[in-house]
Image (cartoon, rainbow over all chains, first blue to last red):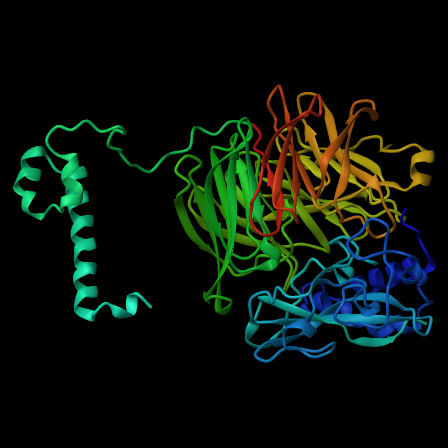
Length: 180
Length: 414
């Protein structure tokens, strides 16, 4: 079931290395892991998992499309488990008014069917308001358990947000690079 | 339009009559006959039919606030995480009858801990001063399982890990004295709370490890990034000693965040995404790795069978039966509901039963009595289905359990 690609192996080795080199007492070492990994990840091989056939919220898997970013199966949302900010006053890469954008993120490699390339998405939570509860998506491509938090979409990623806002409102899906 | 023809004075008069009728009705229910006679002048005509010894078809009711019965091992709790809403709730349900017994109001991503056969309930909570905004407040509450009211409430540091509820992010030691809660930021740690004195003892700094599995009165284990377990022993002053076990998780496997765990038995059944079970026995600071076994044959794996859900596994201690949510599924659908529960004898690692659920479930639990019930929870349908765990027969359905109930929990003896 869980294919173990070179991407997996390399990323695991990378994050273990980062973890071991970072002071575990350090907030940056802990929470910044995702962004450090993400900044290096474009150097890694393409992860083609995103190209496999599947469907949001169905057991037959993920089938991304590139036409409608307000739909859960839009390719950038491949590991977005939450609410699309697009539907609640925000944009694909912008938080809604009155929220606080989190500097921390989790990452995923999502396949764009339009150009046949995979891209790294560093999902950012918009914080400081209660849940948006519009356009709820449940996508789990590349989601790993909590002992690999940089790939976990079950966390409220509001660490470091303005005013220490730790409530979750919605999520944006900015590209941070190509997965190759 | 008809209302518009009534003058304001008439409306006030009409309103006054309703108030008077209501007050008189209260007097009828609460007062003695002598009192009622003294108030005859105030009773509207419509209520005079109740006077003068006219027999009532329906007896006058008494009203009160109920208490739930003593909790038993079939008591089950369903937590509506409500997709990270700041206001959530827990339903207490009698598994034998499928009747909702009461509700506990909770905040953001609450962790509930059951102890002593469910006679003790602890809640690790987070709340904000102004709804979703303002200063954060973390605290511990105790709940009475009969009155569903708060029996203790005290502060802890604002460090709880706000993550989709994973039961082992909060637990109590085997003697029930200390509550443990996980802290993710700013530093990885485990908060230790003295339940007897109702105070935070300390927060231990820990390595890159997660989840807590109590293994003794002053000890617990954690699952670490690189695949080992971390043994932690602490004393009543909060001093701790730690050591890693050998690696348990193979590098090519990933474990669900929500394994089956029995605090009483000291047993954990870690479950890999692809369907292997890794049993571990915990006692004090020692961990013994059991022989892993597969949930599926090679042919079944090729067909796509794999475990999946949020709480995909539950263990019945007395019978050594492990219940696992399974289905045919594509890669990366490990958190999606499953339509089947497969049953395994954990002594031999062999499958001993299959249960086709009436509706796919996101989470399961099993009661720890001699005739166990299997609870299957549909997070997106808000329904709990209650099955006979031995036959798979559906007993009850409990619907309308909030917006997105993901957590189902049962007590065990201590």
